Length: 64
Image (tube, rainbow, N blue to C red; front, side, top):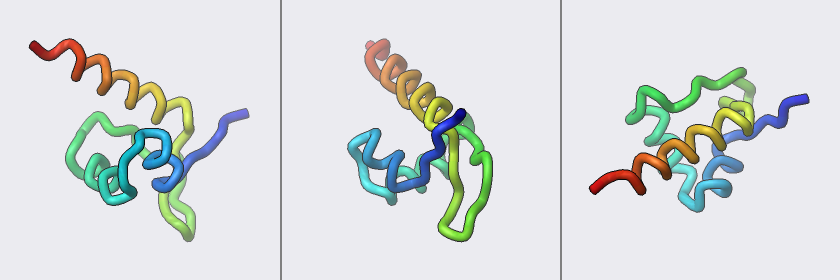
């Protein structure tokens, strides 16, 4: 069973503001697509978001 997260939970996972998460959606083509749009906003699988955050961290650490 998948666990789902919204903007608030993603912001908490990443240690950023909700506005930052909304910016990521618009700025990064590789940001995961929501699995559903609910009345309170989009939701994603926690696994997809964690994977994306980990990949961003790896890219950041690999930069010279």
